[in-house]
Image (cartoon, rainbow, N blue to C red):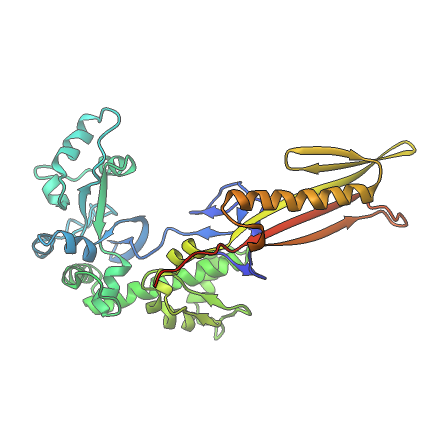
Length: 374
């Protein structure tokens, strides 16, 4: 989630939040969540859980490995005591193609040797003993194996709202998971879809309402209060089969929901034709030493002292523009393709005409010109 205002993304001095962690690197104010079309849906205590792990959707895997269909038909539901994110009747594992960089423990090696270049189920890995998800987790963390499982993308395949891959695999798995939640496969997938839409809205609102915990927002979303959140800015949805969630999102919030014509490839198009942005800050400080004023300019990689404030301003203005254009040139942009906006903020003492501090912010926006072959 991020926000664009006046053609510019909102910036954050503390850095973007990724998976709930503050990066502390100055960047676009953006938050990511462990939820997407490939988030693993697994059952515990007769309730579906979404993520946080990502897996290859069953519909995608079955398109590459048709034998997965027969495995799904023969899948058995493990004991409720054993169920967890890795112990599921619709969870499979496959090698990533990476080789171990360090020696594996005996338990890790035993499991790794049983996982092949085709999907393998829990029952095939642990034939003669109880499953041990700990060592599976270690192999996943080392990126030696990858999970295959039921996802929101599979749910949409069952509902017929997105059918790019093998729907048969999704339907078989949905029937199995539905039995575990005492639901039919359609009802189960509708539940999953609504929960995904709800999470989308909660992450959106927690981004906009910074000091309110997502759990509090969830209480309002899920409660029967005869009210809903209203947004005064449009919400643009991008990526994958996001169009399937438009109506569900509209039910939860009062907002203008925008779905671009090619929303499913919006992220890829953005990466291709996106604008280059460079932000430079320059600070001018008036440091008084007894009866003498010391005008000092602080810029990236440079510190310079001036006799007067106007001289410092002129130099800083030229330097800021030069730094922006230099950055854009390195990115392959011509000066004619770059628009530079400058904002100035002065801090003055009451009755003093000379600012004690001036902050100049230069924002360069460059749009690359690309040839399009038709």
